[in-house]
Length: 162
Image (cartoon, rainbow, N blue to C red; front, side, top):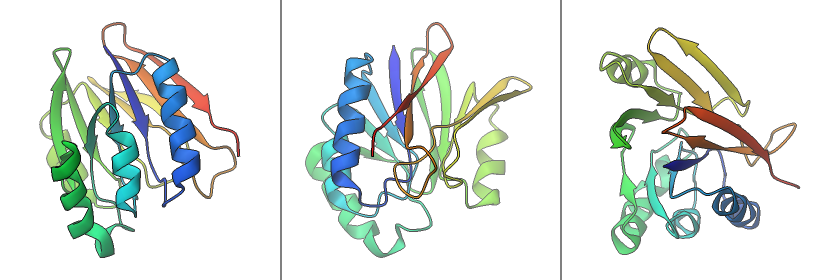
């Protein structure tokens, strides 16, 4: 199973739609948005596939609207952070601005830890966990998303043109 990962869209709907199209071409079967969504239209766009998302530090003013669009589209809100299991892999997701959420999720020893917040793409391992930040679609040197093949443990960063 391939998982599309994006973060820090900051209401850049057009760029987000292009990114989702690229993720679909890469074979993504589900999408995880690592926060700083800011507008419900972003979740609506992501929900063309199974969609999971968390709230980031720039989502506080739109939490109610994001919850509402999740209900309408079938997207799953993980609130400030949560765990999902796909392809028999445990995946922790949080935005990355709250250390208490990071500690809580890491205590569960996930296979993958997905976050955003820094607007910088990252892929590293520490112990049993692979940490992935897909980059950002706003205020970044290069706009990127990522696709993760959960069965092969292969990650590919995909540039999204301005």
